[in-house]
Image (cartoon, rainbow, N blue to C red):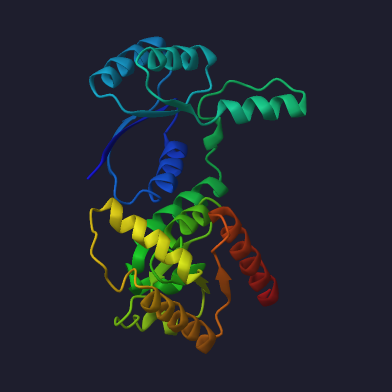
Length: 272
């Protein structure tokens, strides 16, 4: 199995890095990730200490530092070691400041104002992680949204994206030969959405996943006829329960989430 050392450096709590890293890493399920995390980094000596650690354990570096001096020091140090060093905030902040025509403030942690919206997003993220892949079905009725779908239909990354919008989302896999938990059919509160994908594209994605895992034998998981049958059975389930369906074949996670949020808001408006 391929491994990755991921260095995460923040001048605040590191929550932004955690969310972005998690959303990205779900796209690489077969990579073993070793995370090294530094928070509240606000002086040059801390950067020196971190660079020493990075040199001892080289890897991929992502950071959120609003202090330009610290940013330059970290980027230069990583460049000398020929390691990737990705700034998640400053490119956006710089372009936004240019567009608005105003000078931005350099306040570490200012993106984490402890307001109701912030705590709502954190609670939503915790909910998503606790209800990923059919977990914790006993309280699935507390979800705002539930995503259904066969394997590799972007359920998890879409849920994480929704959490960053304050929406508590759960996802439930549809697996051939395995009955769904009865709780999902009794849930009345959440918007339940079925995800589907073109069978041929799904076979390609699954085949690549198995190849990364070192599996070469043919199985029903990548058999075109079996996969097409999976999709048909899932659609039949959606139709039976009148759940809205989204074809994610040519949609990004952001586009899928936007469609779900539109359905969710329409549902709220209809009830209120």
